[in-house]
Length: 146
Length: 146
DNA sequence: ACACATATATAGCTGCGCTATGTATAATTG
DNA sequence: CAATTATACATAGCGCAGCTATATATGTGT
Image 1 (tube, chains in turn red, brown, purple, yellow):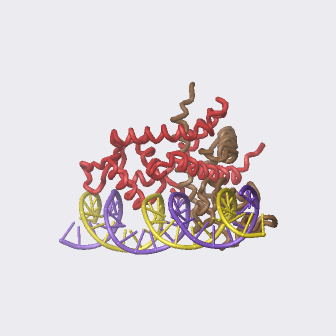
Image 2 (cartoon, protein in one colour; image 1 turned 180 degrees about the vertical axis):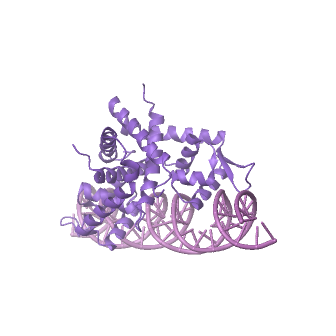
Image 3 (cartoon, protein in one colour; image 1 turned 30 degrees about the vertical axis):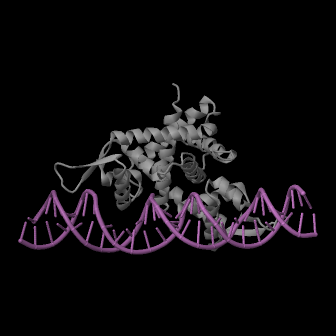
């Protein structure tokens, strides 16, 4: 069966977006999805400059500034001055940030378990491979227009 | 390997959210992601009442009202009075709506091709199966708290 | 020193998405 | 059949993500 890329990408986007809505409502604490997405990026990739974070999170630089400000206000990230360049600030997840992220992950898993627990192991493996594939697409490239 | 559901769900959410950001910027026309998500839901599932749309889209009813208003203003959906119940309005995608959706899908595919075209067929099939799995999770249940 | 490039911050806007509440139509019940 | 309650959607008003345009501060090069 020839995979129709148009259809696949459209569906992938639509279902991804709906899934983020599910998650947002399920683990619906006070924090917004963007906060967790940003924290996830920082946690999985490690400390980085603000501009880099913006690229990886696929948001504009001002948006990243705001998100980091929010995260910093909660004590979940720290900004450190770069030794060699006074303009850059390196963002780093704090221990509290890792804990908050773990807590959210746990809440999310608990809330979404009813939806996913009935899946056979093979489906979970499919999802896992899909996550890996998508992450590589999202992370590795320098952006669509590069 | 025992799949860690906590990790998987957290990663799935994070990468899904990032993917929606990629798509939003890639096909970055004037319309917002929510518009396309809503239109996708309507198109794939068919005409439905507003409340149903809210549930399937995983948004609140007032949010659905607003989105439908936006879509109606662009002539992409129509509201029809229900014969048996004067309270309900049935939402239906117009021909123009289908065309707009197809156009967006095309733009999205074009923009994301550089990221996905290099994938082997097996990966595309994995993504396709993952889309199916996720869609069933998102569609079938009546909501987390039901 | 001066011009230009780069990294982040600020200002101001649009629109999503929410809760709380209002309004109109059904359904129910004494 | 009138009064109550439930349902479907609309309205009001808020918070915040995310954007563009622009400012500020620092670095680089001639």
